Image (tube, rainbow, N blue to C red):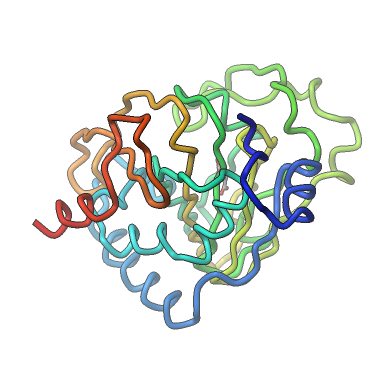
Length: 264
Ligand SMILES: O=C(O)CCC(=O)C(=O)O
């Protein structure tokens, strides 16, 4: 099954996602939700373990109920369902917070080449701050998501591989598209869309975003551990069924069961 086989999608959204490999979703959080998220993030960042940086907080929705609520916002899941079909699994989140002046760049890469997963997947990039070139927003290369491009090592543990510069078009500066989003807005990207982000060059503006990762319940789900943002101790990735049913995938946990385990 391809990611574009869902039952009755609005055809224009599918076409655009299929052709370009990304899609702007517009506003998905209210101003109130953004303010609450920023307050929660401030608490989390104050508790961040000294071995971690603010751009490497992985799957904190497995500890933080507020982040699980963001990842299961109905307007976001509706958009994801239109691409993946009715059975949707949340398998990871990544808080990528770039502090003013010091927030790091991320090189051109294709996510799918880093993951031990297969099947239809999409990522939703959701801004908690207004994001633009100055504070290190994301750029995508439209239409280049249909093949895996050559890679080389970066020598950095954060993103250890990048796309070979020779595998990218020479006129990339004219082709790349900037995610110029307001706080509370989101965009969706394909697992193979080449993307990058510059450093945060702003003197006083944070760039805080969360990337929400979803897959179809039909996909193959590999084991993975992440460091807990408070303790740096490793925990196992959970596959949470957030829409539909997943009878073919015995490793899944339902959203209701997962919420209960968080509350316990
Ligand atoms: O937000 C960024 O700067 C990059 C995000 C990214 O690499 C991803 O979503 O995989």
